Image (cartoon, rainbow, N blue to C red; front, top):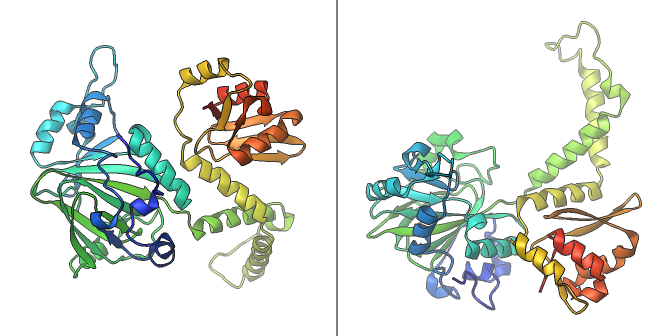
Length: 404
């Protein structure tokens, strides 16, 4: 089941305009509806109704990989889960028996985190995340005819909505809060959301198979299935923000002022927090110290922190433990060793120690292995004899490399 059209970057499969124009005019700013006939190919290879049936009936899914919703409310987990049977000792596996009845009664099935469980979507999301520079997740929403899973709301991440099967009518409204952060959800602003949803929508359109809708975070949306079962895939893009930079700069500044005995010193006896004049000297001292610490913030340290955080938001490409062991035993001088895809690896050389850091963990390097490791990081692949057979086997067994 191929999920990526050959010869096309992932982003160009989702938007009907030039990527540079998308980056400057639409990313984080405007909604964009791209019709199937404006895109290079459909999305059926990512997920279809047979795949959904397989996932909920044969793969032993547990919560939270599935949610069920109806008329804007999420059902309790016990409404669609049950025991796994003899030998499973699991009490919350998805129950296909219950799902049949719930779906027939108008409930929407929400398959969550498909970027972790369904191979075509895993690769699609990893490729898209690499292109965008922002983490990507995937959920699928399957709705019975003439039903609606969720009422008007906004997300705190950008989304690409890919219509897979059937049709859905979408209504899009402008934000009540521009570019909301993760701790600024829509249900904190229910009254504003309801009022905005009563206004004339920015976009009202029926999405058909192969259509794609981009929505920046904060844009209100609601969708209703029309004449048949409808499935759409939502790719959630969890954008890095300037607020993330601010958080790390403040962390550095607080660590810096904590090293200053003058800032650590106790306030005077008899402190009166109701008298602003009483604390004026202390407040001015702290303000100056924080401003000085912010101006002295270490850019390299900020980047190291963000790189570490970025690694934790995605996973490296899947690998099989059994295959890795088998391949490591069969490495010869002519074998091609490739850096594991989506590893996000870098070489840190601090304090006389060399360490490869990536999504598979940290890997210490002796001095004699630094040069060949640098060459592998730069080229992406090399012959085992150029890398060194011992290093090649260690990298494969550590999950940092694969044998092509």
